Image (tube, rainbow, N blue to C red; front, side):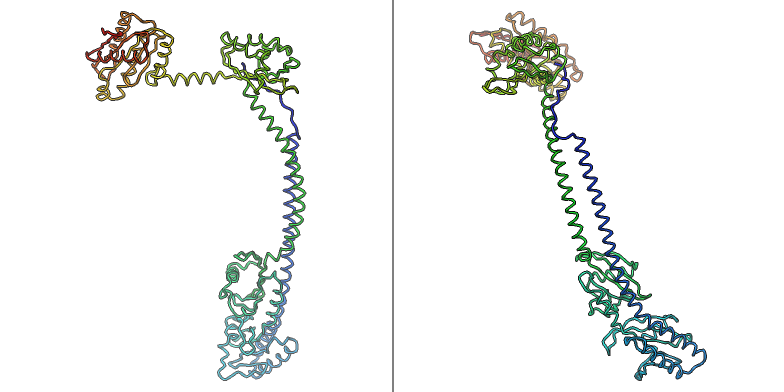
Length: 622
C-alpha cells in the first residue's frame, strides 16, 4: 500500500481559534491597561497624601523658624547699635543702660519665652534684665560666649542646654562684636518648640517627630523624655539610621525600612544648624488608600475574571474538539488506507485513500459483498490469496465479529509487502447485527523486516557469521523429525588452547573465523553448518548417505584448511580432528545418539597428528 493521502477532516466544534486568540489578547491588553491606570491613580493619590503631610511639616517648621527669628533679629539689631557705641567710645555703663532699655522694649513685644539682652563689653558682663552673676561667674567660659567667638561675627545659635533652675531646654543667640572680644546674646526657652513637635506627632501615622542640631542632639522630640539626648545614644535603630542619613546626604525625602515596617521620612532645615525630622508610618499613611483601591480593583478584576472564564470555557471546549480531532488523526495515521462499509446498504465510503486503494475501488462504491472476493484476489500476492479471500468473505464477517470489536489478518500484497488488514466494528443495529464496519490497511513491512533481521541475529554466531549452536541444532532436529537422512560431522581444532596461550586470543579468533570460512567453501548452501562454541563446529549435509562421498567432502575440507594463511602463526599449520556419522543409523536413532557417535569419532581422530577424520557407523569404525 502507498502512503495515505490526507484523512477526511472531522467536523470541528466551538469557536474558531482566531476568535479565541483575539479574545484572550484583548482581555490581557485590557488587564494591562487597568493595572497601569490603577497604578497611576494610586501613585497620584500617594503623592497627594505625601504633599499634604509635607505642607503640614513645612508649616510647623516655619513656625519654629519664626519663633527663632525674633531673638535673632533682636541680637542682630542690638549688635549693630553696640558696635556703633563701641566706635564712639561709649563706656560700659552707657552700653549697660542701652541693654536695659532694649530688654524693656523686647519684653513688651516678645513672649515670655525669651530672656533679656545681655553681653560682655570691654571686659565687663552686662545684663539688661538686671541679673547679677555670682562671684565665680566667668563669662568667657560660658557656651554663649564661646559659640559667639567661634562664629566670628555671625549670629549663631548656641548648642541647646538644660536649664537646671527651670528644668527646661534652652538655647542662646549670640554675636561677636567688631573688637573681637565683646559679645551680645539672648537666651531662648524651647518649650514652645517642644509643644509644636508634640502637636505634630499626634495620631498613629507619625512614628516620631523631632528637631535636632547638626551633631544629632535632640532639641525637641515627640517623646519628651528623649530631649537633650543624642540620636546615636538612643537604642532605637531607626533613630540611629536617621542620624546617619542626616550626616551623609541630608535628603529632604526618603524611605527607610527596618524589621517593624516601612517609613517615609521628611527633613526640613530650620537654620544652618538645626533640622526638623518627621517619620511617617506607611501602614497608616496609605491604609485608607489601599482599602479604596483594593476594593475597586477587586470589583474590576472580578468582572474581568468572569469574562476571562467565559473565554477560557469556550476555548476549552474548542481545545477538546481539537484534541479529539488530533487523537483521531494520530490513530488514523497508523493506517495507509481506510474505507467504511455499510453492510445494510452494501456501500463503501473512502475515509483515507491512497493510489493503491483508489485503483482497487476503481471509482465504484457499491456492492461490497459481490466485489470482496475480486478485491482480495487483486490486492494479494499468490501465497496470500486464499488466506485473504477467506478473511474478506462478507458472508462470515457477522459471525467472526459477534463477540469482538475487531479482527485482523496479515498478508503479503501484490508488491511483496506485508500488510495487516483489520475489520473494526463502528456500530450495530438495534437487533445487534452489524451496520457499519471499518476496513483499515496497516503497513507492517518494516516491522517484518526488522523482525527478520533480529531473528537472523539471534540465530547467527556473531564472530563467524554462520549459525550458532541453538539455531543449528534446531534445524538438524527438524530435518531428523522429517526423516531426512544425511551426514553429520563434528569438527575440533587441534591444540587450539596453545594457539591462544602463545599467540593471543586475537590470533585465536582469526583461526576460528578461518575455519568457518573453510566450512562455507566446503559445504553446500543447503547444508546446515554451525558453531558449537569455542573451536568446535558441526555440519549436517542432507542426502549424503554414502561413505565414499563423505570421504570426498572431508578431503575437500582438509584441502581448504591447508590453504589457511595467518601471518602471526608463521609456519604453524591449522589441523582438524573430525568425527563423521550418518542419520539414521538405526530405526530409533536420535539427535543425542547421532551426536555421541560423531563425538566418539572426533576423539579417535585426535589420537593421530594432522588433519584426521573418523567415520563412525552404527556398530563399527573405519
